[in-house]
Image: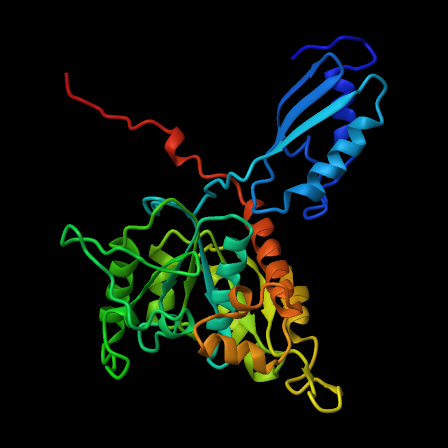
Length: 366
């Protein structure tokens, strides 16, 4: 680091940067060690910012540049915003998947709350911000991702006879048991067999350099959910519910399950929160109101956002082109992107995975 004058020092630049909070986390970039390679030379200030989550770069660059440009002696500010996503720590004893940095489970206590639709649009929103994203359909008994992503006619390839290649859809790497069996083939498996099949789908798919693997769990808290929560390297979980009291009861059970197996809950999404009549424009809370926020208040987890009961969400998912992919400029797509951002920010607050830093210790006799 160099400086041409006492008035334009690295320290005074750091002080200026420390006064700027990240609009997505509320914390400054200096104390959270997000500033890299700060140099000052001939009135030009250069540094890199590593937010740690997918972010729209220009608003961050503008905030930091404006703070530095107020200093005497600054003629030019050059800021590089890194899109690098780091692996976060998982519970002790569980190894990360090869080529997968973070695994996000999307769960619900009961069916019919729009969990799969939320999971798909969450994955698409993360990918839209530049992250490398995969999706695993963990609903062995009712796989829906092939239809939602328009890949129901595709079959995974295997080049070595041991692993499977994920199917590409809307920029996502996708694997589902629905890609391996017909639409009308029932999966008449007991819990342990289904759990084993899920583990194989997760570990024997050749994921390629994923920042996030979004796992669409089946509803409930049974064998499959528990097996995944205990043995898979889950970084965090997102709970999807409706405001309805019955759905909220089951959502609490799902939240408590992750709590007991030490998987952080990244937040709660409230789906079908409000219905707007297409004829008269009247707003109605058909399933109640404020239930998702109440769970968050009770358990101290983030409220990620609320989605309306909207015909287009269902139509677009059924057609194989979910909202974020088919109508990216819509208000609903914007809500999904906001939910994805809050999810990524919550995940980035988890300590980094440092398992690769520890050497293997081998003890030999004599």
